[in-house]
Structures are given as C-alpha cells and as structure tokens.
Length: 416
Picture 1 (spheres, rainbow, N blue to C red):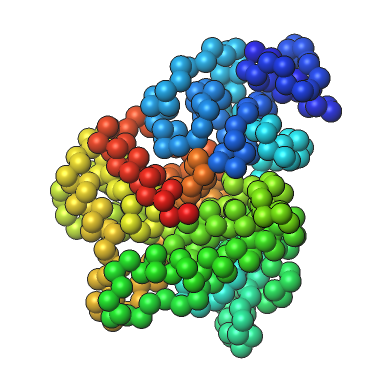
Picture 2: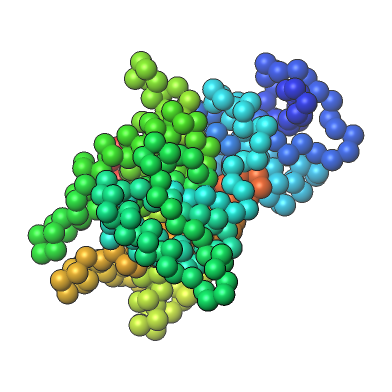
C-alpha cells in the first residue's frame, strides 16, 4: 500500500511512483480517498467502492455487477481500509481524469439537503412528473423551476401548481416558479424531459423509443454543452427516450473541447443518470401480482438494462428461472403497447415510476432504479448515492442471467 499527499489531503493507492508527494501511513484512521488509474473517457471520475476488486480492475463493465466475474484477485488491503469499504466510506478517484484534484475537495456530489430542481419541458411527461414532485417532494425539494418554449404552458403550470397546497400549511410543498432558459443550470438537479415528437398512436412503430433517438439527440447535446459552460456540478437527469443512449450523447457532447476531442471539462459521467428503468421494474411487479408464476419477483427480482430493447428482468436472484424471466421481460417490454392499443400515449406510469419516484429516492440517498455510467455506456441497475459517491449494487449472478446482461452491454455499445 502506498500513501500520497496532495495539499492537505492524504490518499491511499496500490499504484507506486505516482507523481505526487509521498506520505506516511496515517497513525490513526485511514484515508477515505483512493487513487486509481483508468481510461478517463470510459470510466467514472470517482465512485463509492463496494468491493476491493474495483480498485484493481483495469476496466468497468457488467462484471462489476458480480465482482466474482471481474477476472482479478481480491487485493490484500489493510484491515482499516477494508472496514472503510465495508462502511461504504471509501471513494475511488481516477487520477487520469484532467480534473481529478477538484473531486477531492468537496463532497462526491454537490447536493444540499433541500434542493432546487429545474425541469425542461412540461408536456405530457413533464407535467405529470411536476405534479408528482409537487405532491411528494416537500421533504427534499425546496423549489421547482419550469421552462418550456411555450410561455403560456409555463404560466398555466405555475398557476396550477401554486394553487395546490395543504390548508393552513401553505409552505409544506415545493414552490413552482418559471425559469428562464439562461438560468436552467442554476440548480442542484436538471431534469431533461424535452422531446421533438413522439410517434403517433397507431403509427405502427414498434420500438417508439429508438425512433426518437435521432430527433432528441441534438436537443440533449445542446443542453449538455450549456451545462459545461455553466460549470454545472449537480445531477443531470435524462427522462426523454431513449434515456440510455441519450445519457451517453450528453456526456460526450459536454466533454467535447474546441478541437472536437474529449477533454474532460464538462459533466462527469457520474453526474448523469437516465430515468427509464423504474417503470419497467414497476411493470414487472404489476405482472408478478397478476400471475403467481412470477410472484418471486416481488421478493428478490431485479430489473437491468435499458428502457426498451435489451431490457433484462430477473424473476429472482436466489431462484433464477431463465424461461420465466424471459417471459416476464417480454410482458414488461411490450406493456406500453397495450396502452397504445387503447388509444392513449403511455406516459403516466413512466413519468411517476421512472421519473418522480426514482428522483426522490435518489435525493433521499436510497436504493433506486436508473441508468448510470458503466464502462462507457449507461446501464440500468439498482444504485444509490452515498457520502463517498455512487454505489452500484453487486450480487452473485446466475450464469444465464449474467450472459443476458453481457448481451445487453453489447447492444448498448453498438448504438453510440
């Protein structure tokens, strides 16, 4: 084990000869920061360490969901350091990221106890999300700013939402205010719910989400560049379809320098999350309640991957059944078509289950379903924010389930 000093901060590392001042092992306590060295484009700049093998693996990929498959031995660490990992207090910092030193001076994510949330676009999804956040978010959201191209839409929803309150407790719910386009990143959480059109009901498009990628990609890239210019340090949340490739598009655009090359001066990978998996998880629970064959999902089932093609539903981690899981996955993946067959756009459950509920769980530092950076793609997993950064759930995964996750990883890498 090696120890280094940068300013007043002491780091631990398994890497010898780093270009830093060597330091002695602290006589009491243990460093909460650990230096690693990885490709900065395809790796997070920092994260909460939950398994010691995450410190020595050369790359990030789906094997991180089951560290026994990472192909590296468990490193021998001092007991005090292992205790720090067990307590989820060790933060790994990638020294190859151009701004690595900046990430050691502040909390892993700049999020106060009560936050300002700004929402771009209050169409079907945005307005439903707004309503849910207004009603449910009083404990962690101070105010919600809304922005839309249609100023009458903004005025309507500000007026409607400000007329929603508990009698005699008029400040219990978050305030809703208009926000100018130039002030969108004066907030702690930015919600991107803008879209350039959803294929019409009855239009014959089976994968509606991917049909929207070409239209929505320039939009999210534009706002990602604005986040870079604003030096935004909060969460950048993508709700528009398809959330997973749009997250990657936002990351790459935000970090593109004047020469067109990646320079690491924009959004960090761990700042960006895609909110699409929550409704898939909720739909799996819906079908599990309908059919006793799927009942195990309610006990220890999991959802992984994108909000669309490549989705993986596991009926159970402890009693995984590949046939049942694939059947349940198909039901979940096509559930939105049932709403379309009734003549409606399926946006209410996604706005609430994927949007409002997952955001509130995120802000409360609880486990939730969202797409996060994993080896250069955004992959839907169970995760949470900790004092040390983003923690991705790890588990012992049955081989048939793991192979499905590997297939999804390949699919996502081929999109962008």
